[in-house]
Length: 239
Ligand code: GLN
Picture 1 (tube, helix red, strand yellow):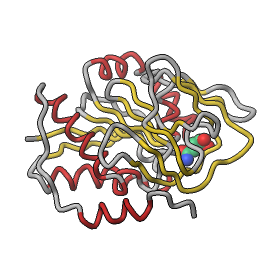
Picture 2 (cartoon, helix red, strand yellow):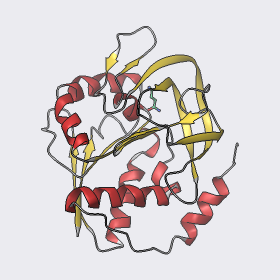
Picture 3 (tube, protein in one colour):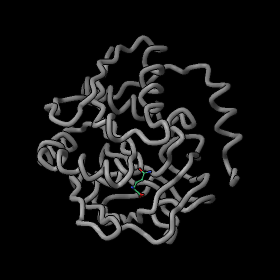
Picture 4 (cartoon, helix red, strand yellow):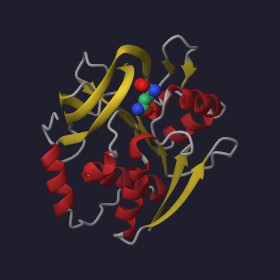
């Protein structure tokens, strides 16, 4: 079996070790004998068609450069989403999956509207550990580290990944964290996100396999004793 992963703009959006998400996806496939075709897509490259796309976080400046490039392929990405492609965006990458990101004192950055969401820069920077309760995976917790000033608001059929019990999440007001619409996922959880939430990594791999083969494929279990213990240690951890 195989899946393909397109890594969107890693030379610009790779804040707080977001590359760890790619490493996790690759290793959890490799350990199961699933081949992974992996390519970076950087400024000037054609996007190409993949089963799963990943985009990390970044400062406003890097987001500006990526937003200009992403927007050229907005319709292409929307068609990919509607054909079942999987997307994971972290923080700045997540923000650009929405309609726009409005930084402080700068022009609005247009997103590619994979999610019915928008982001405006807030006055306070949200920094710290996050625990959120989710109904997407079992155990029903997601953990990570957030560092953003953007306030993200969800609309329409775009639903949160979870509800925060520790931390600020999307906007520090409605207790939501992250977003999902079809197979598009966004989260503010850095750290990296997937090594601390291997159950969510496996969800993404199963969705990417379903995209590739057109049928649901259940992954074999891995010995996740260490990963699960690490996750449990972080659940409810504020400092
Ligand atoms: N620049 C965005 C913000 O501050 C995203 C930051 C990030 O990716 N960590 O909200």
